[in-house]
Each structure stands twice: as C-alpha cells, then as structure tokens.
Amino acid sequence: MVSLAHIKQRLGQYGAAWLIAFLASGAAILIGMAFDDMMVIADLVLPVGMAAVVLALGAALVATWLSGQTLGTKLALLVLAVLLVLPLLWAPVSAAVVIAFFADRSIEYSQVYAGFQISVAQILYPLSEFVFGPSLFEQVWKAFEVVASIIGFISALSRVWPMIRRLLGPEPRTPSDQTS
Image 1: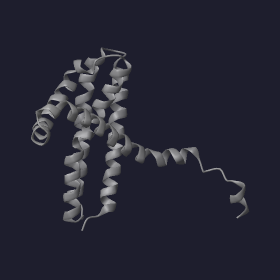
Image 2: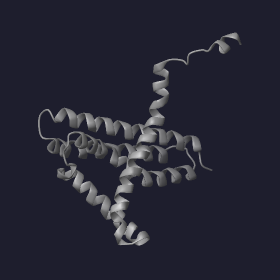
Image 3: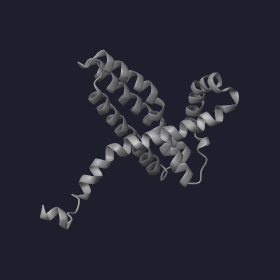
Image 4: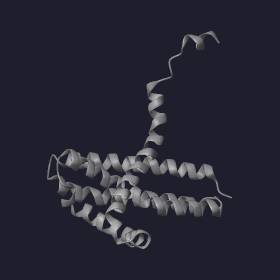
C-alpha cells in the first residue's frame, strides 16, 4: 500500500526546497556581486546551494525510511527522489542563470556551472544516445533545463499560492452572497 498523503507532503516539501534554494542562491549571488565578480560569487554560492538541497533531499529520504510508512511508500519516494534530484539541483544553478541573463553575462564562465553541465551530460548523454542516437544530446540538455525549471516553478507555486491567497485576504462578497 502506498500513502499518497505522505507522498504529497514530501512533494510539497520538495517544492519548498526548490523555491528556497532558488531564492537563497539568487539573493546570495546578488549580494555577493556588490563585493566581487559575479562568476567568482557564483562559484562560491552554487556548491553550497547544491549541497544544501542534496542534504535536504537526503534528510527527507532518511526520515521517510525511519518512519512507520509502508515499504511501497518508501520505495515510491526513493524513485521520486532519484527522478527529481537533478531538477532540485538545478534550482540554485537556475538562479545563477537568471541573474547572468539579466546582468548580460555568460554563465558558462562559472566553473561550477560548467562542472554541473558536464556532470549532467555524463548522465544524460549515454541515456539519450541509447534512446535517440548521438545527434540529440543538445536537445536533451535544453529539454532538461526547461523541464527542471517548469517542475520547480510549478512545485514552488503550488506551495506558495495558498500563502499568497491568505495574505490577500478573503474574497470580496457579492450582493448575491449577502442575501443567502
């Protein structure tokens, strides 16, 4: 038996971790740019951000395995963690990419970004070559960037939207609501 409530809770925590990693890394890079070059700061911030998300993901997995959840739930969350680790790692990198875009800088000069891209390529290239042939690796990389960003944005939005609605207050009542 699989506990969908527990999986939903972990996916919500995943969304929160993605958003926090994106915002914290972005803020750290922006603040650091006041003191040094963006690429130097990105090379300092990105490893910390990626390590933090890996630790958070690992802590969630350990907490699930130590909980009283069923084996099916534990295995489902393990599979989800394996599938979502790259999009989660992309969160701090994505913040650096966005800042580099608006700063009109090339993020490829960051050693950490280049290392991340090479590491992901070493994982995705054999898979894409096996499935699609060698000519599609560039499209697979772009698809990874898009999918990771979309997954992170949707999960973050689903986590943040209820808080935003509470901050905005209750919906205004219409005259038809007041008569009932």
